[in-house]
Image (cartoon, rainbow, N blue to C red; front, top):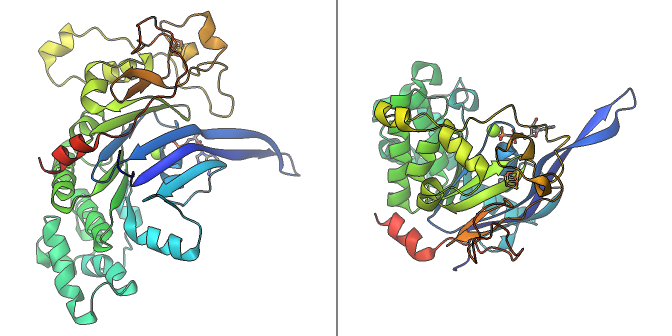
Amino acid sequence: MSLPLLEIADLHVRFPIRSGILRRETGQVRAVSGVSLKIARGEALGLVGESGCGKTTLARAALQLQPASEGEILFDGRHIKTRHDRSAFRRRVQAIFQDPFSSLNPRMTAGDIVGEPIRVHRLRPRREVKKRVAELMDLCGLPARFMELYPHEMSGGQRQRIGIARALAMEPELIVCDEAVSALDVSVQAQVINLLAELRRELGLTYLFIGHDLSVVRYLCDRVAVMYLGRVVEQGPSDALFADPQHPYTRALIDAAPEPDPELARAHEVIPLQGEAPSPAAPPPGCAFHPRCPIAVARCSQEIPALAPVGAGHGAACWLARSSTGGTGQHDGKPVDLSPNPAQVRQEMHR
Ligand SMILES: Nc1ncnc2c1ncn2[C@@H]1O[C@H](COP(=O)(O)OP(=O)(O)O)[C@@H](O)[C@H]1O
Ligand code: SF4
Ligand SMILES: [Mg+2]
């Protein structure tokens, strides 16, 4: 595989739990426990999982906004160590968060919001900033008259377009979208998602796309990683993962997603996801999913299953998942190659 644009290797993020008047550390929240991911240039990787499973913490660590307790993050093959690395990284990687209203300065016009990074980083000569802002807004489907509007004068979808235009002003290579469309109405969501897909094609962008709506992730992403209680429990090409999920948790998530076709919905036998996810401050022993798993066996509560191959570029961390080597349901512990397939990525980019 060619060099991944972003590589996360065995990342752990733990938050201390403090109590008593001395604020002594009495425990830890294991928000991310040993996650490894690679994203190829031009690829869109989706990250899904229930609320609290560590998606935002992982994204913040990838964005260098949250220090890692252990593990490595490489961007374009390099560690981010020096101030120079950090400032280059801040230009090349941009984030789009859920609530565009809270992230946009209410006292600035849309034109100033989009133009600010261009001015601060001197990306264009002063006299060209306005033209560039108009260009970026046009790219995001907003007419030039929006330049004069304040955030409260715009709809949620328009504000998210401003957020995207501002991120694009830096000419980034990687965009991290954390629930970027989750707060929008369904019809507006679809428009913003189409915009993200178009921008990716036109600008050759790479996405780490976090979302809880599986149909959105499926539409937008080449590969998907499913997180449960701080770990990636399944990862693979979107088509394979959705058509043939191997981890019971992935199956439950897909089953829980609303089926738009009522005929199919009736025919579909749903395995409900029972109970709530346990706390990452006290994860269950063995496979953390075992208290909720409909097919758990004795081994599940004792040993943690590693991500093992179940198909081409497809891995699952379950003692009972199909093994690509024989189907005994017991994998051999060999590491699974989950590298993106460059040919497929190129195809996606030019689709
Ligand atoms: N700054 C923090 N301090 C302590 N615990 C945190 C902090 N940020 C997140 N957590 C905890 O880490 C876990 C993962 O949270 P988060 O990454 O926000 O999950 P998600 O984005 O998947 O909903 C949760 O249990 C959350 O309460
Ligand atoms: S390892 Fe066991 S408990 Fe965990 S998902 Fe697989 S069958 Fe269920
Ligand atoms: Mg989150």
